[in-house]
Length: 202
Image: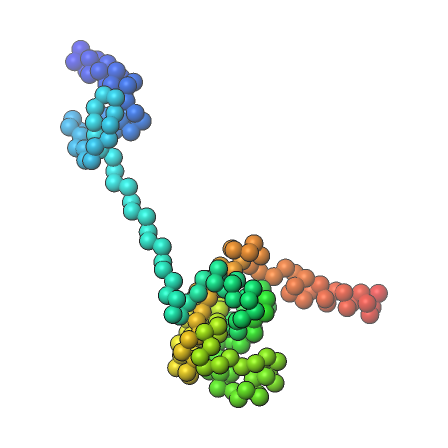
Protein backbone atom coordinates (compact mmCIF):
# COMPACT_ATOMS: atom_id res chain seq x y z
CA UNK A 1 0.00 0.00 0.00
CA UNK A 2 2.87 2.37 0.80
CA UNK A 3 4.37 1.74 -2.63
CA UNK A 4 1.05 2.44 -4.36
CA UNK A 5 0.59 5.66 -2.38
CA UNK A 6 4.08 6.87 -3.33
CA UNK A 7 3.41 6.06 -7.01
CA UNK A 8 0.17 7.99 -7.03
CA UNK A 9 1.83 10.92 -5.28
CA UNK A 10 4.61 10.99 -7.92
CA UNK A 11 2.06 10.83 -10.69
CA UNK A 12 0.18 13.80 -9.24
CA UNK A 13 3.40 15.89 -9.09
CA UNK A 14 4.29 15.04 -12.71
CA UNK A 15 0.87 15.74 -14.14
CA UNK A 16 0.67 19.05 -12.31
CA UNK A 17 3.65 20.27 -14.34
CA UNK A 18 2.73 18.54 -17.59
CA UNK A 19 0.68 19.57 -20.59
CA UNK A 20 -2.77 18.19 -21.33
CA UNK A 21 -1.33 15.62 -23.71
CA UNK A 22 1.02 14.34 -20.97
CA UNK A 23 -1.74 14.17 -18.38
CA UNK A 24 -3.98 12.17 -20.64
CA UNK A 25 -1.33 9.62 -21.53
CA UNK A 26 0.26 9.34 -18.08
CA UNK A 27 -3.14 8.66 -16.51
CA UNK A 28 -3.95 6.11 -19.19
CA UNK A 29 -0.66 4.27 -18.97
CA UNK A 30 -0.64 4.23 -15.17
CA UNK A 31 -3.72 2.00 -15.28
CA UNK A 32 -2.88 -0.07 -18.32
CA UNK A 33 0.79 -0.54 -19.19
CA UNK A 34 3.83 0.14 -17.06
CA UNK A 35 5.95 1.40 -19.94
CA UNK A 36 4.33 3.71 -22.53
CA UNK A 37 5.75 3.65 -26.04
CA UNK A 38 6.23 7.15 -27.46
CA UNK A 39 7.01 8.35 -31.02
CA UNK A 40 8.25 11.94 -32.54
CA UNK A 41 9.21 14.32 -29.82
CA UNK A 42 6.93 16.80 -28.09
CA UNK A 43 8.52 19.21 -25.58
CA UNK A 44 7.01 19.24 -22.11
CA UNK A 45 8.16 20.92 -18.83
CA UNK A 46 8.95 17.56 -17.24
CA UNK A 47 9.75 15.18 -20.05
CA UNK A 48 9.72 14.75 -23.80
CA UNK A 49 7.42 12.51 -25.80
CA UNK A 50 5.92 12.43 -29.23
CA UNK A 51 2.62 13.54 -30.73
CA UNK A 52 0.51 11.63 -33.25
CA UNK A 53 1.52 12.56 -36.81
CA UNK A 54 -0.48 15.44 -38.30
CA UNK A 55 -2.36 14.31 -41.44
CA UNK A 56 -1.11 16.00 -44.59
CA UNK A 57 -3.61 18.41 -46.20
CA UNK A 58 -5.27 17.04 -49.32
CA UNK A 59 -3.88 18.68 -52.47
CA UNK A 60 -6.09 21.21 -54.25
CA UNK A 61 -7.33 19.93 -57.57
CA UNK A 62 -5.81 21.83 -60.47
CA UNK A 63 -7.96 23.08 -63.34
CA UNK A 64 -7.23 21.59 -66.76
CA UNK A 65 -7.34 24.83 -68.73
CA UNK A 66 -7.73 23.01 -72.03
CA UNK A 67 -11.17 21.61 -71.18
CA UNK A 68 -12.21 23.31 -67.94
CA UNK A 69 -12.69 26.74 -66.40
CA UNK A 70 -13.42 27.98 -62.91
CA UNK A 71 -15.79 30.59 -61.48
CA UNK A 72 -13.36 33.49 -61.88
CA UNK A 73 -12.74 32.82 -65.57
CA UNK A 74 -16.46 32.36 -66.12
CA UNK A 75 -17.15 35.78 -64.62
CA UNK A 76 -14.43 37.35 -66.74
CA UNK A 77 -16.00 35.97 -69.91
CA UNK A 78 -19.46 37.05 -68.78
CA UNK A 79 -18.20 40.55 -68.06
CA UNK A 80 -16.68 40.77 -71.53
CA UNK A 81 -19.89 39.42 -73.11
CA UNK A 82 -17.75 36.88 -74.93
CA UNK A 83 -19.23 33.51 -74.00
CA UNK A 84 -21.67 30.95 -75.39
CA UNK A 85 -22.87 29.35 -72.14
CA UNK A 86 -25.04 26.24 -72.41
CA UNK A 87 -26.93 24.67 -69.49
CA UNK A 88 -27.16 20.92 -70.16
CA UNK A 89 -29.47 19.99 -67.27
CA UNK A 90 -32.81 18.38 -68.05
CA UNK A 91 -36.02 20.40 -67.93
CA UNK A 92 -37.25 18.58 -64.79
CA UNK A 93 -34.16 19.70 -62.88
CA UNK A 94 -34.52 23.27 -64.09
CA UNK A 95 -38.04 23.38 -62.63
CA UNK A 96 -36.53 23.26 -59.13
CA UNK A 97 -33.09 24.83 -59.56
CA UNK A 98 -32.01 28.22 -60.82
CA UNK A 99 -29.69 28.93 -63.74
CA UNK A 100 -26.78 31.18 -64.65
CA UNK A 101 -28.03 34.34 -66.41
CA UNK A 102 -27.52 34.39 -70.17
CA UNK A 103 -27.24 30.62 -70.61
CA UNK A 104 -28.99 28.58 -73.29
CA UNK A 105 -31.00 25.57 -72.11
CA UNK A 106 -30.05 22.49 -74.16
CA UNK A 107 -30.36 19.17 -72.26
CA UNK A 108 -27.42 16.80 -72.53
CA UNK A 109 -29.48 14.30 -74.51
CA UNK A 110 -30.00 16.97 -77.21
CA UNK A 111 -26.45 18.39 -77.39
CA UNK A 112 -25.31 16.17 -80.26
CA UNK A 113 -28.34 17.03 -82.40
CA UNK A 114 -28.15 20.74 -81.55
CA UNK A 115 -24.47 21.09 -82.46
CA UNK A 116 -25.15 19.49 -85.82
CA UNK A 117 -27.82 22.05 -86.73
CA UNK A 118 -27.21 24.50 -89.53
CA UNK A 119 -26.56 28.12 -88.64
CA UNK A 120 -30.08 29.07 -89.76
CA UNK A 121 -31.81 26.35 -87.73
CA UNK A 122 -29.72 27.19 -84.66
CA UNK A 123 -30.70 30.86 -84.85
CA UNK A 124 -34.33 29.95 -85.37
CA UNK A 125 -34.38 27.68 -82.32
CA UNK A 126 -32.16 29.61 -79.91
CA UNK A 127 -32.34 33.18 -81.22
CA UNK A 128 -28.56 33.62 -81.13
CA UNK A 129 -25.57 32.88 -83.35
CA UNK A 130 -24.26 29.34 -83.42
CA UNK A 131 -20.78 28.90 -81.88
CA UNK A 132 -17.89 28.44 -84.31
CA UNK A 133 -15.89 25.19 -84.39
CA UNK A 134 -12.79 26.97 -83.06
CA UNK A 135 -14.66 29.03 -80.48
CA UNK A 136 -12.85 28.70 -77.14
CA UNK A 137 -15.69 30.41 -75.31
CA UNK A 138 -18.25 27.68 -75.90
CA UNK A 139 -18.86 26.60 -72.30
CA UNK A 140 -21.15 23.91 -70.88
CA UNK A 141 -22.33 23.59 -67.30
CA UNK A 142 -24.72 21.52 -65.19
CA UNK A 143 -25.31 21.14 -61.46
CA UNK A 144 -21.84 19.61 -61.05
CA UNK A 145 -19.07 18.42 -63.38
CA UNK A 146 -20.41 15.11 -64.70
CA UNK A 147 -23.02 16.08 -67.30
CA UNK A 148 -21.03 19.09 -68.52
CA UNK A 149 -17.93 16.91 -68.93
CA UNK A 150 -19.97 14.53 -71.10
CA UNK A 151 -21.16 17.51 -73.17
CA UNK A 152 -17.55 18.56 -73.79
CA UNK A 153 -16.70 15.06 -75.02
CA UNK A 154 -19.61 15.17 -77.48
CA UNK A 155 -18.65 18.65 -78.67
CA UNK A 156 -15.02 17.68 -79.20
CA UNK A 157 -16.06 14.66 -81.29
CA UNK A 158 -18.16 16.97 -83.46
CA UNK A 159 -15.23 19.31 -84.11
CA UNK A 160 -15.69 21.89 -81.32
CA UNK A 161 -12.20 21.08 -80.09
CA UNK A 162 -11.77 24.15 -77.92
CA UNK A 163 -15.07 23.93 -76.04
CA UNK A 164 -14.84 23.66 -72.26
CA UNK A 165 -17.03 23.20 -69.20
CA UNK A 166 -17.50 25.02 -65.92
CA UNK A 167 -16.56 22.23 -63.54
CA UNK A 168 -18.17 23.71 -60.42
CA UNK A 169 -21.51 24.07 -62.14
CA UNK A 170 -24.61 25.59 -60.60
CA UNK A 171 -23.66 24.56 -57.06
CA UNK A 172 -20.28 26.33 -57.23
CA UNK A 173 -21.91 29.38 -58.84
CA UNK A 174 -24.34 29.61 -55.91
CA UNK A 175 -21.53 29.30 -53.36
CA UNK A 176 -19.63 32.14 -55.00
CA UNK A 177 -22.58 34.48 -55.62
CA UNK A 178 -24.72 33.74 -52.57
CA UNK A 179 -27.72 32.77 -54.66
CA UNK A 180 -30.05 30.03 -53.34
CA UNK A 181 -29.49 26.60 -54.85
CA UNK A 182 -33.20 25.93 -55.35
CA UNK A 183 -35.92 28.20 -56.64
CA UNK A 184 -38.38 29.79 -54.26
CA UNK A 185 -42.07 28.89 -54.39
CA UNK A 186 -42.85 31.99 -56.46
CA UNK A 187 -40.10 31.18 -58.97
CA UNK A 188 -41.53 27.68 -59.37
CA UNK A 189 -44.69 29.17 -60.80
CA UNK A 190 -47.01 29.16 -57.80
CA UNK A 191 -46.73 32.91 -57.47
CA UNK A 192 -47.81 33.46 -61.06
CA UNK A 193 -50.61 30.91 -60.67
CA UNK A 194 -52.12 32.65 -57.67
CA UNK A 195 -51.60 36.05 -59.27
CA UNK A 196 -53.56 34.97 -62.34
CA UNK A 197 -56.20 33.36 -60.13
CA UNK A 198 -56.66 36.62 -58.24
CA UNK A 199 -56.83 38.57 -61.50
CA UNK A 200 -59.52 36.48 -63.14
CA UNK A 201 -61.57 35.07 -60.29
CA UNK A 202 -61.42 37.59 -57.44
